Amino acid sequence: MLVVYILLALLALFLFLEILFFLIAFGGRTWADFTRHNFFFKPELRPYAGLILSGKRWCLETPHEDVDIRARDGVRLHGRFYDVENRRGIVILMHGYRSMAENDFSCSSEYVHSQGLALLLADQRAHGQSGGFAMTFGLREHEDLLAWIGYVAGRFPGEKIILEGLSMGASTVLMAAGEPLPPEVAGIICDCGYTSPRDIIRTVIRSTHLPVGLCYPMVRLAGRVLGGFDVESCSALEAGRRAALPALFIHGEADDFVPCQMGRDNFEAYAGPKKLCTVPGAGHGLSYVVDMEKCQRALVEFLEGVLQTESS
Image (tube, rainbow, N blue to C red; front, side, top):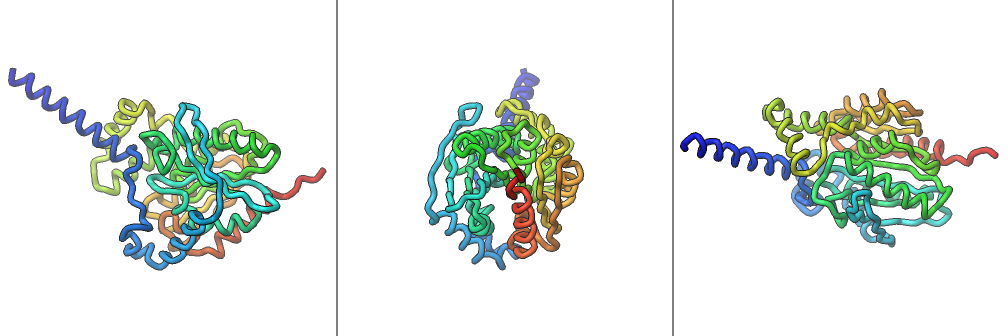
């Protein structure tokens, strides 16, 4: 009988750990909004606090239209559409892991909007006002992006669409770029994206000094059993090898969360026309604020290339 109790206790411990790993890795709506807490006391963010907060105010206060659509699996997806006069195209923006669009694109949205581009700031599933209970590191998110593309292409037929993402959003964009897309999609912008869910999960586990060989299989199993998805079933790197759209890759050379080498690997594997812009001294997601002139120059050059009027 003692053996039975021990086995039951071990099973209970295993189930507890699986739930814990699932919540830590995939649980949604557990983040802290860094613009409302003490994150600006971190040395890498402190110099840019005013710029980030000003950009966030622009995102929140500029007139926009709230939009809701349904994902392929029925989850409600929410976004905010910022139209512009003399519209040249539409940019769909996908934010990062446990973040929000008004933070991740706080410093670039107003500038891109001023270039004659309408913006769709999408809440990733399990974030913001979108539904869903779990993040999947791009597996389901890239299918959500395909739904947003379908919505925008249907509403604005013939108008050019650009896909832009940061961190998990960048990998989401890359995964979508490997799928069949409507002709309206003209190009993609990927800022500090990882190569695959497997790679970034293992990298983060390793950075916390936990045993990767023990923890990663448990995280993967938690996703499969509790979430119904396998993180190894999608890869931004592999999707890029199937892509043909023009692409701009941006990555901070001092990124200690998604290593810059992942951005270089994504760039090297990408099959379509491409350009890489790396920023010395920039941490994760901070390329634009660390060297705004360089990033704006790269953005304008890329946008002019993909938005130019085709000759008749």
